[in-house]
Length: 193
Image 1 (cartoon, rainbow, N blue to C red):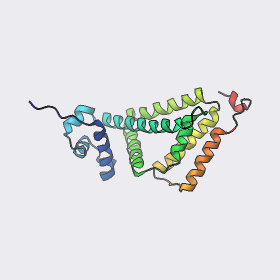
Image 2 (image 1 turned 60 degrees about the vertical axis):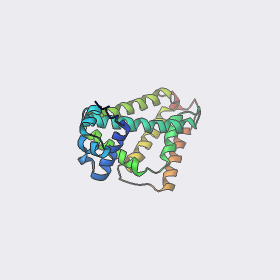
Image 3 (image 1 turned 180 degrees about the vertical axis):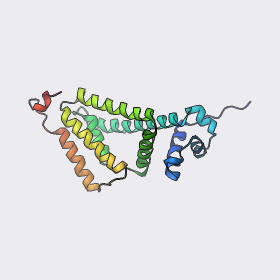
Image 4 (image 1 turned 120 degrees about the horizontal axis):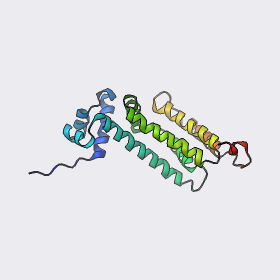
């Protein structure tokens, strides 16, 4: 009796990107992912159970990787207020790569097809907004910064507009200014929760 082949879940998740890049989201299926990963369809089903569960795992994994990148950047800001948003602005300074755009396509398409995938994004946004409300000394400014970050990313990751490098830096500087503006505790915003 042979030993069961160990399936690399990360390789299977990366195969989703290969399928979407080469054939589009509509071609995404358990069979297509299995072929791209070089494994059997039954192996994908054994590990993930369904296309929906495969997409959920993909979105959850990529979101965790993105948030880890933000956390790494935030650590460069030490104990500064809203350090995690400052880290996000640092990430925003870089033009999205082709891989970033592929991931965005998969996330957008996957969340359109699946309530459980939308729930992952909704939960993450709710956590972010709660973090702003509870941790930020200037929550109104922080929410505006958060919305500006998402607005820029939405335009670029959806392919609606690509900002020049200079313009991207200006926007990032403006968002950072919004985060670092008046830290005066007597400013009216600081008393609003």
